[in-house]
Length: 267
Image (tube, rainbow, N blue to C red; front, side, top):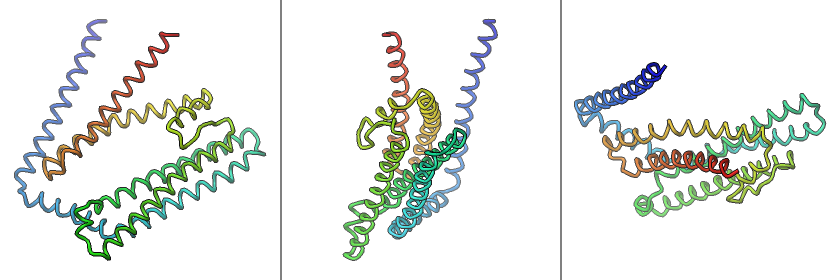
C-alpha cells in the first residue's frame, strides 16, 4: 500500500520535472529561432503591432461609437427581455416559473458580459492615445478630437456602470428578498447574505471555478509578458501586474480557507 502511494507520489514529481523540462526546451527553441531569425523579422512584427495601435489611436472615436453601440444594444435588449419575463412570472405555473427564471438568468448574464466587455473595450481603445507626450504633440483640431473621444469614453463607461445598477434594481423588484445597495462597497456581502442555501452553493461553485481559471491564466500571462519584454522591451510593469494579481489571487484564497477553518473551530 505504501509502495503504491510512494510510486504515485514519485510519478507526480517526475511529471512536474518533465513539464518544467518541456517548458525549458520550448523556451530554448523559441530563443534559438528568435536569435537566428535576425532582428529584421522581430522588427517587422514590432512595426506591425505599432501600425495596429496607431490605426486604433487615429480611429478611436469611430471605434468607441461602434463598439459602444453594439454593447449598448445587447445590454438594453436583454434588459427589456428581463422586464417582460419578470411580468410573465407573476402568473406562471411552477414549471413555467422555473423556465422563466432560467431565461432571466441567461439574459442577465449576457447583459453583464456586454457591459463589462464594453467598459474594457473603451479603455483599450482610448489607451494608445492616452499619454501626455502624444496629447502635447497634437494640433488644436486634433486636441478637440481627443477631447471628443474622452467625452464618449466617459459617457459610455458611465452608461455601462448605471446599467449594472439598473440590473440589480430590476432583480430586486423581481425578487424582493434580495438585499444590497449596488453603490455600496459591501454590496456583494449584502447580496450573498440575502441568498438561500442553493443560491449560495451556485455562487461558491462559480467563484471556485473562476479561481481555478485565474490560477491558470495569470501564470501564462506573466510568462508571456516576460517573453514580450525580452523581445520588444514592453516594460517591467507589464510583468509586475499579472504577477501581482497571481500572488494576490493565491494568497487571498489561502487566507479565506484558513479563516473559514478557524471560524469552524471557534464554534
